[in-house]
Amino acid sequence: MIQTVRGEITPTDLGVCSAHEHLCIDLSRIKKDPDTILDDVGGMEEELRRFKASGGQAMVEVTNDGMGRDAELLCKLSETTGVHLIASTGFYKDPFLPEKSFSWNREDFAQHMMNEINNGIEGTEVYPGIIGEIGSSHNEIKPIEEELLTGAGIAAIETGLPVTTHTTLGTMGVEQVELYSKLGLTMDQLIIGHQDLNTDNGRVLAVVEAGAFVGFDTIGKNNYRPDEDRIRSILFLFEKGYGSKILLSADLTRKSHWHKHGGIGYDYVLNQFVPRLKESGLSDQDIHMLLIGNPARAFNRKAMKQI
Image 1 (cartoon, rainbow, N blue to C red):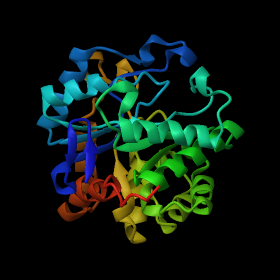
Image 2: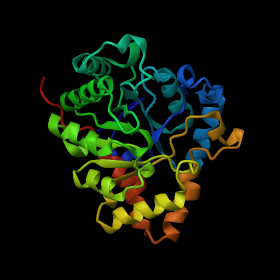
Image 3: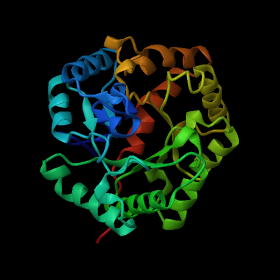
Image 4: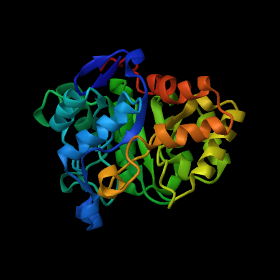
């Protein structure tokens, strides 16, 4: 089963799914930029309706504690628009961690996440369907991030939820896999994020060869990497036999990313990127796997370990 903000659904009911997004977020405490605040509820509804009109049926909302998460709002948005939303538990990365967690160790992080998984997010009746996005810094995993990543892994092993990660500019994905492998996490429970920003196809290949999923989840952010390069990397993974390990999304985090402010919107992957994948040689069956089959497997809750 897959846990959405309105209850469990079967994997086949998830449908076309955007695997890594933010609807409501506030990173301005660190970034000092009002563009990094998404708090326009009407704008969220408008974007979700456009996403649905383009064929989108589900979205994984990975805004967590310290990033401006609003679980009750997600529930209302899902009810209003009819889009399945999956909420998250966890924390982001340094320096975005909330003050309460500055001195926490892996056990503290794990207990916090397991409490939300078992009892609801912040006193609500909304239960997270994923642990994430749990992050590391550029070219390093800081000590507090190692504790956080490990705590997320402990919680995942105990509860069966998948873990989705943040890798700054695509770095440290292999190291994240090694950390979780040593911890004993089942690799098909793991999604290594932002691997479309990793220009080293060999390192991305190492992640999927280990059994983890990879997020090609900053699609449309051509200031980081052109989409044509993302397509070449996707085709490379398909050629190697790992198309079943790729998850797609755009990871919108700014007002300027929304249609009403001149941005690409959450429907960009479906309306702009997928047609280019087809033009590049992927079949309808391949596209169905990327948009429906892969998310259904990645976000399906595994059997829980007895505590």
